[in-house]
Amino acid sequence: MPDYFRINTDGFNKLARDLKKAADRSGPEVLKGLVAIGEAHAELAKEIVKPHSSSIPPTIKAHPLTTRSVAVEAGDESVPLAVLYEKGNSKGKNKNGSLKFDSRRKASKYTSRGLQSVLVFRHPVFGRDDVAWQDERRYPFITVAHRRLAKQTVETLRKAWVRGLEGSDIHVE
Image (cartoon, rainbow, N blue to C red):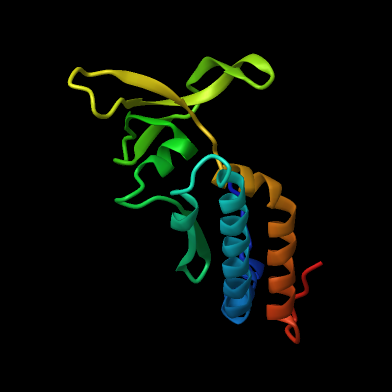
């Protein structure tokens, strides 16, 4: 018995060609779906954060990054606290240079339900000569919007794929 094995990849080449055609054909529909998803996430995020901030909602925007991805971002130079509300304080950088965030920092705060452990971020108290820092309660809004719209997101993308592939040999269930 020979001590080798053989793998036939003829079918993989056809599959790769078919998937490339499917991506090209469905791309415009998927992009429309992604833009709709991004706008829905941005609108819900605005509603979530509105009771806690008047300056963050106008900065929440959705925009396509490529033909196959969309970003929902908040904050700008005039509203730098938006990222702190969402992610918490930076803990340095990852190996690739992106920021790490301390998203799990908690503190005990009195709330309408009594003393509770809540998500917080730290920031300096402005207008003081000494270096004083305080905890501020976090109100994640983009992450919460994403969780609430997860099923709708999947369904919107599925419908976009189906519309984009109508009339082709590829069928999406």
